[in-house]
Image (cartoon, rainbow, N blue to C red):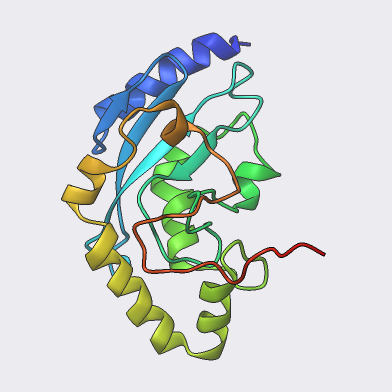
Length: 184
């Protein structure tokens, strides 16, 4: 039986030999450029995926997150966290990076699960108005899933590398706080 360190050493080069552009950060962390699956509203999109391999990999699943924005019921729009049972709950050492990028992520984009959402707005729109959902996905693809956005996404700061399920307030958007706190 091979050690986790040995498995990391063999899986990462597999990524480098495949059709994906991979940027290594260190032994356990890297970014992968991932294209939206054909014949889906995500087609033509390009995303930067953050991958962090735990020391116990392959016995423990990797952390996977979208760096640039995506509109999908099972992906948190602000943090990029992915809700995917096979990664989060039913991971097996038999899986590797090829499975994630060739099977798991494409299936997640093809077959979203609106009954277990991380993005409630996307889930509600998909259930209520599927054509509206497809249009919003395509809008996000054209706005956020371009080569330019991938190149600009997550410039290796400690804050951008942090994968969290809590989003941050973006001051560039034309949003105002819902109200103010007043003394009681």
